[in-house]
Length: 390
Image 1 (cartoon, helix red, strand yellow):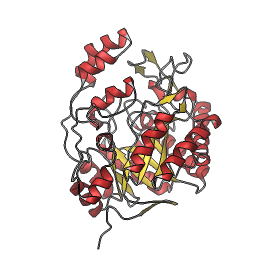
Image 2 (cartoon, helix red, strand yellow):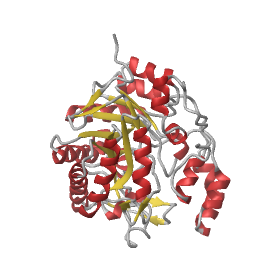
Image 3 (spheres, rainbow, N blue to C red):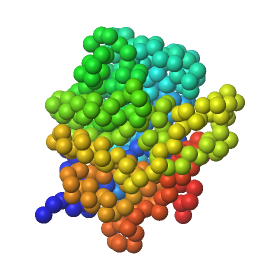
Image 4 (cartoon, rainbow, N blue to C red):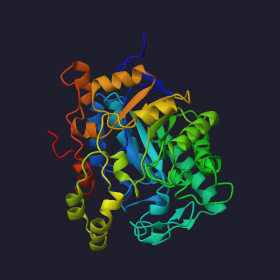
């Protein structure tokens, strides 16, 4: 008999009450880099809805890794507020994960004090209207330490898992992608060189956590555009990470925020709302002029990353978390049945925070989410939410 979706499951040293994970979605509910009451309430509600584990989204490992001024970033002063969030989630019976990362070349210069963003190579960032500078050896040493320190502080806050962001065009994903990594030293070139720095960071995080929490990586399988990371290379990276023994699971994803954002947010493109909500006149104009190039629509399909994820599943034995347009109970059960240890949802849980309980008791067979993506616009207004939520 195979494993069941609603049975408890081990994730490294943690035990989840079921195999459903709330994937990280930038909540837009932090202030001055700290957790707020709204952020605590957001994750408490998801936990009360029966999820196995909820993931607090994008915590920058350092102040220069932020994409907006109020973004959560890890330092000792952040721990108390995050510990309060973890306690709230645990009180509802769920586990809590913290996603840590660094935005690399598309850090917001206004948020990081006017400094030039750091990345694997010198690349122009249209959103930030600036060129990045190529990371030096000293930068890479400091960034590795920043990831390790952030992971240790996450453990101090009581998180059950630390998720390292190696996807969506953020710093570690930028190293993986030949589009942004044009180095000719040990940190660039072929896929092994491009994977060297992300692997180094994951090993450092594993050492810093020291068994106190699970370590996972949100890993791009492909970037979704020509000259970006290919599926073949994505599979190779998964094999390398497995060989390192640095993670307890891989959450499989794809897309590149500054090039193919709708590759990972498939469905409608709420362009008019995005333009109307943009405060900067320059960026509003930029959206009007460039949206047809980088906001290319991708049609929504249930479990749209599954075909690529099967390629990874056939290549590695490390536990995998399937992500991407999962809304139906039969999809989740089939995924677990074919060897994916966990399934992750994001938008579906914005629409129905109590979806796991309702799937389990039979009152729903699928989320009521429609892929309108208006929740993305809401993040900038008053915090991420479904506009149709009860």
